[in-house]
Amino acid sequence: MTRDEQIIDLYLNHTELTVADIAAKFNVSTGTVSRIARINNLPRRTGNNPRFSKTEEQQIIAEYQQTGISLLQLEKKYHTGYNTLKNLLDKYNIPVKSLSKISNPDLDEYYFATIDTPEKAYWIGWLITDGSIKY
Image (tube, rainbow, N blue to C red; front, side, top):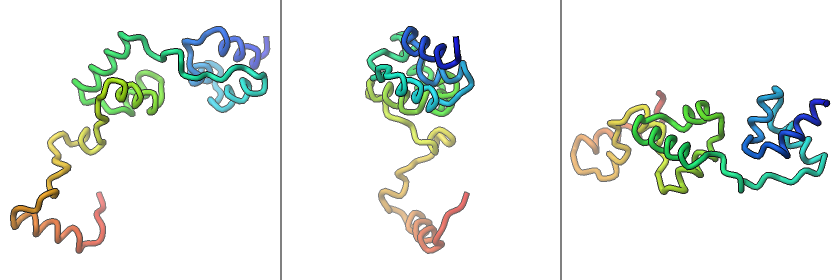
């Protein structure tokens, strides 16, 4: 069997595999797998096949909430994409943590929402007049 035929076989007969999984098996891009599917008039994957079992979903959610792991780290660990994980969190009404909150859990992102002290007024003025913030 040729490489393309093997890809077609996996695409049609192994719906538990994502396009990314198939691409990784053959060391090609996901675009290559999608192109082969399109050229051969294969049905488009609609996402009706769940990427994760209920147990895996609960494991991912628990890990995300309890360990402070980022979506990027989860992407790598579970070999999936950002949107897949974001949709999973949305499904369970779990807000996505900002990167700044993950790297600095004590950060108050709304500290300057209310300017109620002279110190806040001083620092917000200083930041605004500086013109740029580099980190």
